[in-house]
Image (cartoon, rainbow, N blue to C red; front, side, top):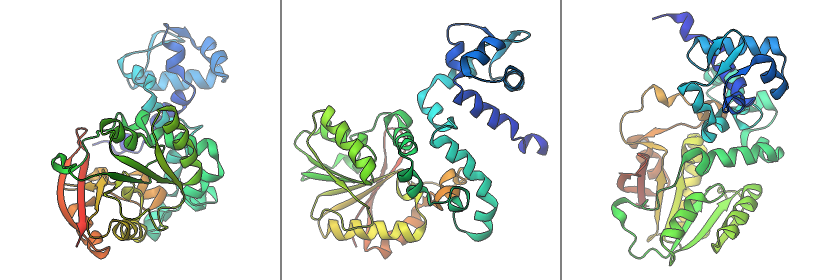
Length: 321
């Protein structure tokens, strides 16, 4: 195995630059000379030329003649909006990429080093920069994660479910999918104020009546509801914060409610994919089922069922221990 290839940083950064500049969009109508691309993207021709020849040599883009570039099947992937959100250095993708510069201090300390890079913790940074928050919401919504599966409960057990609380549900795409599939179910979304405001607009535009609560999910949650949905949230949190969130869910759910955790628990072994931006950004991680059982137990919850979404994401249902 070539360790130099494994340590190459030029290719991932060149790919992010090309994506941020929307080079693939400019080539969608056909091949273009690098000078034209530089004018269209507002770049230096020499730098752009070297960036694209580097990527073409690695199978991204084609150079049918010197200085002229075209899309190939790999480069067409850069037209996909979800990938572009992840790679866009002008949006939250830039934060995701830049956070790796803090990987060494994070490994040494066991604490996320995002604040060292950007001056604020991750969530505070998004709140201070609304354009980053909007970019993150788009990445976490249906553009970034595809359509949501409304059949989210293990075994399809919706009997007696009248109200669902989506805890940290972004702009509400998952909750909207559930409510459209089950018009008789009421919904509540709990999110940070700026995202909650965007969610309220999305629900209104979709003609859905949803209670939107702007605040922290570490504060007391609306109590006495049937299902508390925690989707793609716990993997963003270190154990202390994850435990605090689960305790709030357990307190609100009481003896009869259910807490349903989606996409944050590995139902099989955690592999090398466990090294994720969440670990560096926030100290969060995907947990094994046994690790999650222990954490849930401290919150007064017991795992009652597991399943998978149609997308393959894990679903873990908990009830009062």
